[in-house]
Amino acid sequence: MEFFQKATYEYKVWLGNHPDNGLVLLDRSITANELGTRGYYFLKCSDKSIYCETGEWEEPNYVYIVKYLNALEKNKFDDELKKASEAINDYLKDKENYKFKIFEQVHNKFLKDKNLPMNSIVKTKRSFRESVCWECSTTVDNSSDYECKACGWIICSNCGACKQNGCI
Image (tube, rainbow, N blue to C red; front, top):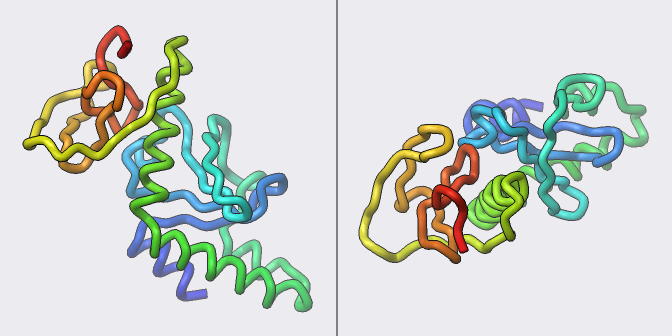
């Protein structure tokens, strides 16, 4: 169980169980998940899909992995422990790919909420740029944040905004 506590504190990765989604992972190092002002982006471990939780993510809906495992019957404990360990290890090995998918979800949720068409994101190879998000005032820079493929603006990792008034 120390492994899960280490992942929670050292890597800022929270793993738990949801009654409908099974094992889920929340990366708190992602700005949108640190602040949680527009929801929390979870990885559903069974199919590697990302979803946004806009409601409460406390018990009984979300149960921390250690508490969840300790409540299991002995015959289910080992199997679920193995799945949970594999889920965290898989995430940590391919964290950049998962972060890309999460940022894309953050951006597309913003666009959808503004009734704009969804767009892809890219990691830039251009020179360093830094600015402030027009929507939520979070600092953005293209060395750590992605850019909107359609308009080229830096995407806010907190709210998902790109160009003000939307990109075309």
